[in-house]
Image (tube, rainbow, N blue to C red; front, side, top):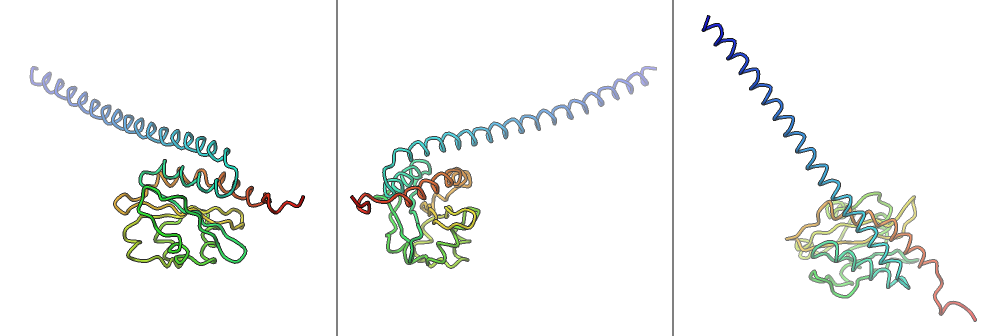
Length: 211
């Protein structure tokens, strides 16, 4: 009789232990989901705050050069050790805009001008995604290997619906590579920046207005 009761008790204990393990597993999964959801929410909130701050900064710009300087400064403030250059298509080629020397080792403007062709700038502008260094090399990037091995870079297109405007080249020292979250945050403001640049390009300069 006692042996039967012991076996029954042992069976109950094993059943309870199994249920406890299953419950602990469910709690563990729930905790991981909550942490992941919190991280995702924090990332989205940071992006929203950045976009709002970025657009607010652009509203105070008075000209195209000022706009590009402001865009580059915002990138420097948002991405640690980053710098940027704005490539805009022109009638016969493209222009490269670089603000004053940033926190990264500077790359000279004339070097950037030799890295790309007008056709490349146009093709990058029409891409619907961020272009990595590997993609840029496949597209024909002619950057100096001595410099390319020292930096991490990506291009943020500024074109839409077949319209080519240009792109923003963001780069960091190689020891501090660009992160996906950082690039996604910058890509979130590319639409507003594109519209702002287009607006200034359509606005005639004071010198071109006849009295």
